[in-house]
Length: 311
Image (cartoon, rainbow, N blue to C red; front, side):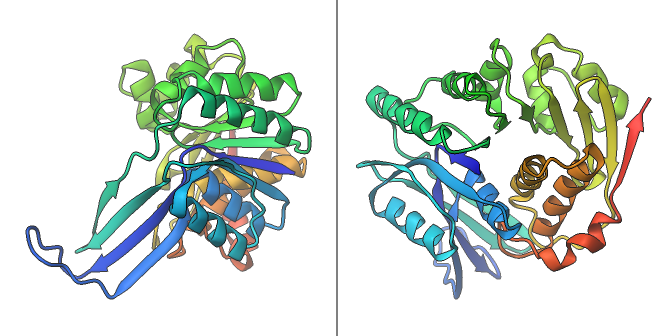
């Protein structure tokens, strides 16, 4: 079973308006509310792929209760640490071809709540064979919190796929215990290294020479519509994808993580693993709902993804 971790979940609220008027009343007819957070998107796609998953993290208040209700409606097994503080809402206003986001920061966790989650996490690890950790840390937790989680997970011999950014990612990469896989994009690589990294293969290869990336078995560098650059141990790959009609790209990176995790769980070959990860990301972008894929289209697009080993 795959354990999908979301430390700072949310209710994602989407408002569709023809024209967004500042300092005025905006009336909304169509509202979409979903259980949000990168790891929950991962879990949602894993379920759609027919693989066993358990969603975990930290939830609180009536918003937390709503998230659990929505996960249960979608038949996504879950086991969260419950706190009294309220979880967050994240609002997206879709207007005139643009998206304006209003993101709450979420609850501030105490040191005791952090320790309580680690205890719960260690208990859950006894029944899983792969872990995904996605998204930001809640306020109150130290920036090296993911380091502790990765160390515990790797110490149990369970691979962990980490998809985060900023200081939380940097702390993990500077630590001795490295995750099994990471999925940065070129912007995140640039932020980590303080240099400009673009989608050029040579630029990415140069960036990955840095010592902080040593010891990571899989590095998947997302390149958006251009596919991905992937390093697996000593081998580099260029993965290209076909042009698609994008409806909603939000959550495509999470769907990519889900596809990678499922293919890894099923012990697929390198080529199949990479193609699966790319296809699930593409399928998510082709649907209106975040963390939603149409598996009926999987085989069609799987055949269109190309994996080329770089000499």
